[in-house]
Amino acid sequence: MKRRDFLGKSIASGILPIALNGYSIRALAENPIIQFLGKAGNEDRVLVLIQLNGGNDGLNTVIPIDQYSNLNNARSNVIIAQNKILGLTGTSATGLHPSMTDFRTMYNNGLVSIIQSVGYPSPNYSHFRSTDIWLTASDSNKYISEGWMGRYLNLKYPGYPGNYPNTNDPDPPAIQIGAMISPALQGTSTSFGMSITNPNSFYQFVNGTVDAAPNTPAGHELTFVRLVAQQTQAYSGSIKTAATKNTPPNKSTLYSTAGQNSLSDQLKIVAQLIAGGLKTRVYMVSLGGFDTHSTQVVTGATETGAHAVLMQKISQAANAFQDDLKQFGIEDRVLGMTFSEFGRRIKSNGSLGTDHGAAAPLFIFGKKVKGGIYGTNPIIPTTVTTSDNVPMQFDFRSVYLSILKDWFEVSDTDLNSIMFKNFPSINFIDVKTNSLAEADFAQVESLSNYPNPAAYNTVIRFNTSGGNIKIRLFDSTGKEIAILSEGHFARGQHEVNVNVESFTNGMYYYQLQSGSKQMMKSMVIAR
Image 1: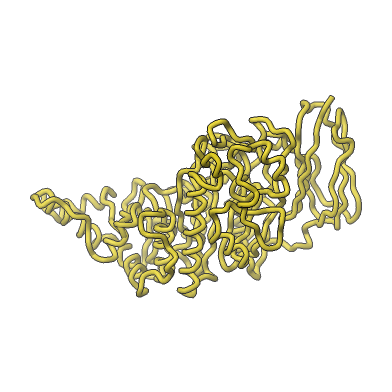
Image 2: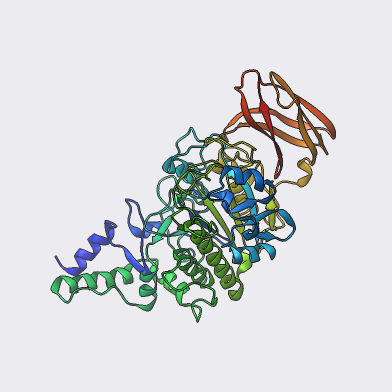
């Protein structure tokens, strides 16, 4: 077979990866690679999703200092010493892991929003299933094939992949730095993502080089295939133009040495491509190692160990990335978000680790965030069992909806088709087109219940400025078990009578939520 025939058949069948900066690029689907390139639209806002694989321990990341005594009782072998916790401007109740010094500076400069206790109503403790729930934005009892960003990109790129790329839209809709395309980018019929699998391949692509092949006939053929594959892929021109537009490629000196921080290496490429003019809307990067069942910390120096290394990588990488964006003059255009499939249990185990849990904090960062802490510190009971969990304060889909509406300016009609149902918006993005008027949300001045402990009945009392309110009940594992009340409440004091005789004895949490505002209290049922 002639080289030309071989190459044509190979590309048509989608088997040839393309190398880009040490990361080979490939689109994962049954269709040709070219089909995965699409328009980025006229909008210039970019979202960078940082997936923390394994389930991050939120209680040792964003530390509830005001709950420190109870937290120490629950996890004395892994808790960070109180004098090591990094304090935050504006609060004495909450701090960060001591390895997150750069991130603390970003927070104090108003570049970070901390969203407390993010999860979903019926938490699943399987890595695979919970990750799938987060990436598809499905209910925990439903299975969906489309990703949440894929549904958004379906609307942005109608008919994709047909007629893409084209003269007006030469760039890929989404790029993943990693070997596989995330299900979050899966659309109705195809994935909207392409992957850059290795940073070294990326720089080889930009420099016009390829991996060395053996000095044999087969090796010469392999070199030829690699070179021609790079030259013939329809998207190579726009990617390379973006990657080589700025000199030097990256302006920040804060990135770690190549290979020492994989997250830093990935974000460095993302900054370079955005600064180079690529109109890609969504980037996904990841960092693994968060499944810390054992040796999460070092005995006697709990501020060090495996989790500390991960916290430092996040902190340094995000700070270097943000510095790069600032020096390129594009920091107004980029929003970053971290997420993990779940948090860890309140109580540590006997192996210097923590087990799969429920809700955990996530970070939104960038020039356009309204920095600060959203929500309150999780309530840590005096006595904690191995099954006790942090209940959610915010559904993760509220975070998604807020990004889609406030950052990408998605209409209410399209939001319904992307998210399937309505979720309260969280006002953490500083843009003129805020999602819902704050007037629609109620201010809550007090919240309590009596009697507490309760045997068969209790009354929840609250005082509000008036607005739409939902009151939910969670058990100690973090599972939502009932919606106690939902609707519009007038200004003043209100009471909600709750019959608890069907609930077993134990610790429960009730949450009053109105938009991005929420309060949570604990109650005990005992007979």
